[in-house]
Amino acid sequence: MNNPGLFQARWNTRRLAFCNVVPLALLAFWLWPTGQRLCVIFDEWLFHPLNSPLATHPIWLHSWAIASLRPFDAVVGMI
Image (cartoon, rainbow, N blue to C red; front, side, top):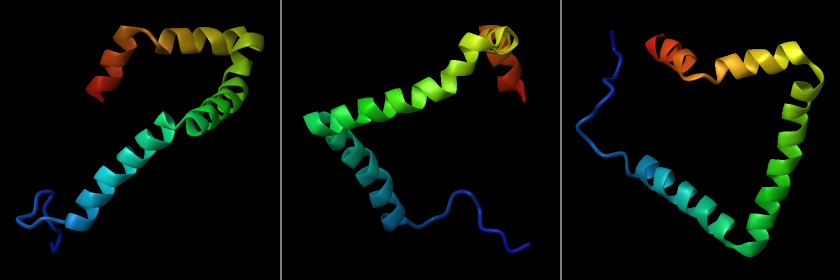
């Protein structure tokens, strides 16, 4: 039973810096006009392959529609 606890009494500065620098770098990349264009291109590239089955398969379309309802979110929240 040598498991460290979730909360420790000391600071982990390396992880703290990492968890602050990465979001700031992503934000700066997105605010940069060229970076924003690259993000939009990547988003469109990923969106179309992931959502194209919804246009061709009605069962898949309706299952996603039901899974997107708020009561289904409550069920998932209880798990």
